[in-house]
Image (cartoon, rainbow, N blue to C red; front, side, top):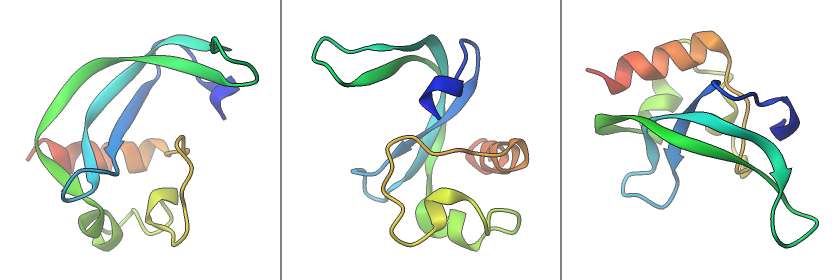
Length: 98
């Protein structure tokens, strides 16, 4: 998925180590996939766009209509980069800006 990310793409910033875990804002891809200093890792660079007034907790994501299939709400989903559909992005953004 990281190879499909393009500069300018918006991303949801999910903080798994916060209390509660959840989406805390929006970031943007500022540099596409490139090798990290230590091979074989590859990374994308992101930049700050917006911080939500409150974290949108994982529990809220799990119970919000339209997010039933969102990857982060699935049990055992532990990837650091996960796909989000446009409708999911829009729903989470609306929740975050309340």
